[in-house]
Amino acid sequence: MKYVKFVMLLVLCSMLFTTLATAQERKDEWKDPNYDFTKLKTILLATSEVPDLQIDKYESRKLETFYNDVFYKTQKKWTNHAIIFITLSQLQEKVGAYTGLDMQQLAIDDPVRFKTLIKEYIPICTDAVLDVQVISFGYSRKFVDAYSYTYKTQKETEVETKFKDSNGKWVTGKKIIKEPVEKLVDVPAHYITYANAGMEYTLIDSKTNEAVWMLLDIRQARNKEPIDMIKRIIDRATKNLEKVF
Image (cartoon, rainbow, N blue to C red; front, side, top):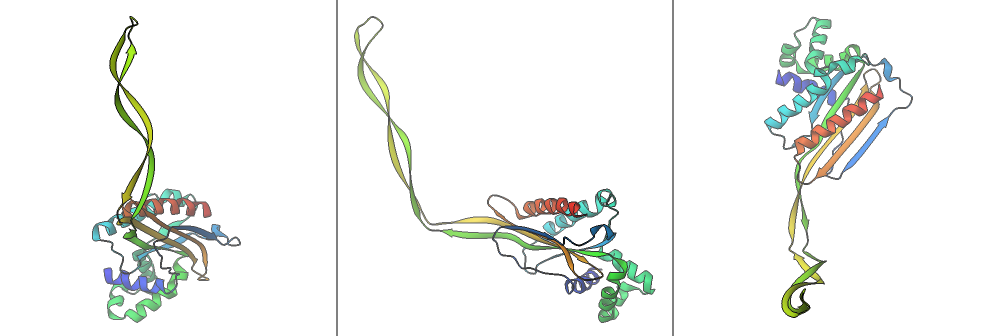
């Protein structure tokens, strides 16, 4: 099954836009102003990650859960727009129903024909493909040269002084005197660790193979986990996608 999904993904990737991202933060979005989004009913969800990203098996499972939560578990919010999302496996079943072929076995016996059929039936079985790709994930370090800075504070000094008591008699006592001072701090050269996360969404019309909506969200932050940043990106992208329909 994993091999089948992999082959299907290769087919889809040949139809979709792929962008490699740097660690720089960026948020961008585009929508075709002349496109009729109300005609979209069945959308194939194709998720992937840029090769060589350091996503372990636990984070991969969390990603699957995130996608399931926003596209399948909460299907009602999409049906309000008369939209249903299908998986790669469901697409394979649809193609099998049309052709009468065992698509899973065909992927093993004749991968070339399998890919050709999948590509041929995407416009028949779906109205659009939503390509969701993780393009940045992990940590990076930035070198910071040594530097110095000053700050102002108050210096407290205890001094002995004479003052009159309640009876008007001079007595000796102590009091605190505050005076402004400027201090110098030397910071040695060091590294700062950043968490990086980025995703690209591309909604493509299955019939024309033209992108009609795109969203790019790349983030960098300190003291955060990449997988948590990915979750926030998915939540934001989902809300923006809902506004499109």
